[in-house]
Image (cartoon, rainbow, N blue to C red; front, side, top):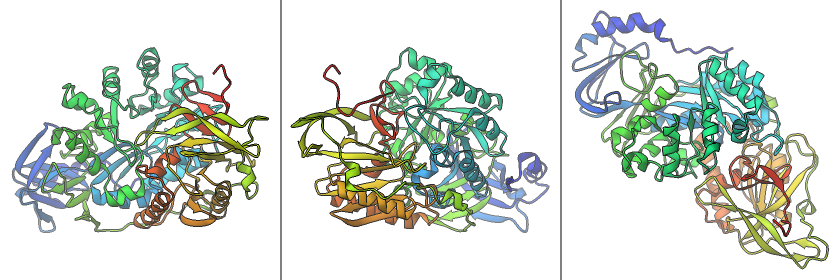
Length: 601
């Protein structure tokens, strides 16, 4: 078992008291800052901040009594000192990076605390994978707290995962030193129907005094939503409307407003605070899923903060939403989320609060980034071979594996089609009339083929269906072993031959993403760890991902962050229509449906 190298408050208390009282010198003093105090929501000029043992010891008008011969002094010259930013809900794997590489990417943007739910790894590697993520998180010089995944599979009976998570696994994880709660409870129908397994996981978490994460992906705010809230989830990030945010906080949940690479849900919900005047203490900002390109080029929680301000939030309120509100939610307000004595010394210096240029980042009392670049490096983490051999296909596939036979004698057919909605997680359940050629249904016009290729147990299974929204207009295909949440392989294309070539390439690569056009590879991103992550630096992964995005655009795709949309097409807990290894899933009714609807449907 790895142990946190960072000392606890009891281990540091005597020294913190001595420094604050002037009996011992501080390790670092920041002089002449403007203190962004999220406890009182005010900017306090002419403030000195003393740090010892990685924690704040003194915050006040004059820290001269804390300065000794070995004290490092930083002149703030009036710049604003604000707490390091916290991401309340996120999946490391969505960045296609390991924990180490993700932390290296976001620290220069001012993120010093992350609450991560590794349910992607859990679906592939089970409890063993969660433990590896947990142990890697402990090795970081910033705070990476782990929530134990709750739902693998996310919807039992509607998909087959590589591994499953049990209530016994949850109870065991609650004893680990860096587990702070239960990851998002995606099986919301299970909670609503009092499924014993789901309730056992929630009970084990609450018995450990930890936080239960929510995921209510339905617009229905009637009795079903009230039943879900009664089931114990303490937060929810699936809202997309003002009324969603209001309903959550009224029932005692925290409304998590997300801005990820493809999810733009802040603007429509933050009006509950900016226009309706609701108490902002129960509103939290998060990212959920961020692509590596977003991290490298646009930022992380600093991007979410700026967006919230652009949407009308008072900068100090927005700052609370990504610092102290998050810390309070997880019961960690005595550790993180504010600049105050005893807390971990996580701090940003900036010259402007609203636009938030991140000039200096201090984590646990050490300068870790300056002007957008890391000032120190830290070691990597060894992922074993068992985590690198996860693409298990029975054989190479052929074009015929992607053929969709038409009903006997049909000249055309009405087929169900998954409709992608730009910048949102939900899909639409559509139908389209498609032509038949040689007894096979053809993708036509805006409609592409989609296939889910089983890759955990080498069953040889391929589920075929149709999708629209990507705009591919040439013979092409894109394949990915990132396929939330069961993480089989999703292939979308207009050419069955290219679909087979793309799938076979990922089998040989050991996992990743690839785009093919007319028999040739245009771009690939290798993701050898669980078929989800790379241990290469974020800039390298982002460059490969950018080439992949350019290849998609060259094939006619104009969707914003289309890759993220692609990766969610098998997420059978978000309405309306999804694909799984068991078939097409109607997520409004949580049942399997046929590709060709019956007339009475």
